[in-house]
Length: 571
Image (cartoon, rainbow, N blue to C red; front, side):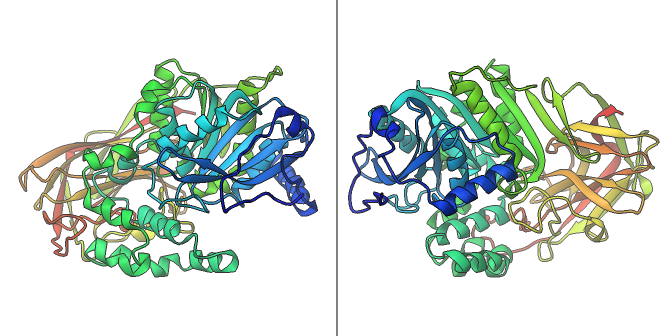
């Protein structure tokens, strides 16, 4: 049967349970698709398929303001009535997200795979995040009028697709039985400006990719992605930021300039970018999947904590991946756990419950561990800053200074970024050899020590320029001197504090689960930035989007009042 795309007008989907059972609602996958499905099953370790399915392409679901959201309907054969999974994405409806839709459909679920407005045929212009709450509700309202919908609904997706779920959960539909949110933020203002500094590389790179995805396909698309770092160089390193990005964006991402112009997260501009109300309102059973090297990790942990404390059924899985690896090497495990969660909460058949509420990957020994909750019980261990770059377990003395120059900003090496190849865990020795990076290193550990939680750097710092940032990082130094980053964060200082005053800073890094092996050393880095992961502090009071003047800053770190607190569990 031909695919009923009908892009010229709305498709009125009147498919009934009986129609779907007779396999007339759409086209059956061809031989190539079936072979890909079998390969995907083998690679992911999914349980055997339960049924065949068909696909009805190109449904047009109306929105309250007169636009249409193009949607593909995956229909399980012989499994009606059956629950429905809603996946809303701005990245198209083909590979790789359609692999997940097909996997769910082959295991008894209707799947609606929908393009967000302004993308892949859905009408209106792309306004990232702004309309997701309304469009999600309009889609559910449309779904209620379908004869094949049996009243059981779940949502699924990662990253932006996760935000789309949180937007819907601000007013949870009564039919919603389960959610699976993978590395998905609920507060985009916090994601961009939570440290005080704009996450430049991530959100310029995302804007470039989102604005150009309709222009390039196939080999052209791959070539465009490979050239991203070169194409975006001026936008990352040039000034002023808003103008420097235009040669790459070519006016196709107007939101990027708006993001730069609204650098205060509490600005009313960000109201539609924040879905924190969902954490206080939702009672929907939710599986959260995070990644230790993901830039949204803190939000994933906040989602878990708030839902757990409210008594909502919530589970947490955190793997060793970067953000993008959740659709790469992390995908098999994530897909298996997602299907198990959906089966548990939507299927009428008795299904085994999840073994434990929390499942984390401990780096170092590289092993999965089941826990009753996060964080587990730990003890606090303080390592003090001392002369000669030492971390000691007794109070330190002296002070250290360094000069940060925004004209030659301290570079980002690894860490929780979107960009492949330069993100994740890297050897930091080159970075630590710079004059603008302080390092403090412990003696070799006499026994294994596990970090299970968020380290806190308590620093006494004075700056001769109040417009400054502090970047802190914990590294694991092995017996050969290789220094691998474990966790970090940046803090933009309050410019109203007079220059020269000693500030007592409490800087909480992202949580981690990492075992330092016996003989390894703990290292703390302190510097004035991590560019272009974060937009550099220009050292002036100029707005970040239009600033062109650069002024250096001299930092003085007072050792006697400074330490890093680790939450550890002796092994």
